[in-house]
Length: 245
Image (cartoon, rainbow, N blue to C red):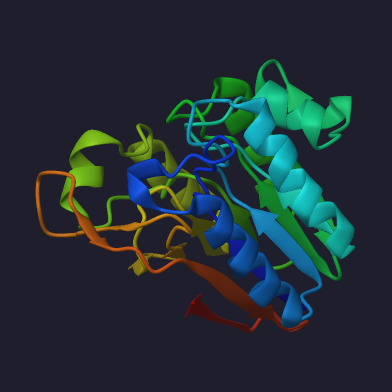
């Protein structure tokens, strides 16, 4: 099973070049490259719009993705409006829970969990749902997509200014439910893998710009857009790589 993750699009208004970059052109080029790999599934893991919750940007993204005919899912980031995403991308009522968009999908033999960290944290109801999902998993693999990395990653500016605010709760979760966690995130605008206990956290670069990792201030490292290719075997073996264009 081949999955492609695209994250942190930050699509501006038509004709707008946020920080001088053609974000619409970047996403279109990324999508063309990704589609050529013939993935089984596509995941857009948050921050679709440059202006918080901009519905026009999300409609534009949808207009490019739907014609591909590739099954896809969308989760919100901190620059998104979960209710707007649910409406624009046609999510059912059972996927939208009191302002949060989270759900599970059965992809082949695997259950995949999609979380909503758009507020930088998850509600008690979402945590309870996640625990119930983990308790019901048939095998050892826990495959999760979420916008925020659920642990610090050594990216100083993001760790200090915009981290996931419930890292201790995630730490308790992975100890309580001892699965093999494969977590795919964005938010940090870097390529990084963090291995901790029974969890691997894969941080995927943005299609916008990448952030310098070792400075307290926000600084752009480079502006090569990227996406992540995930190859998941039926036996749970997982191979993943980041593709830059």
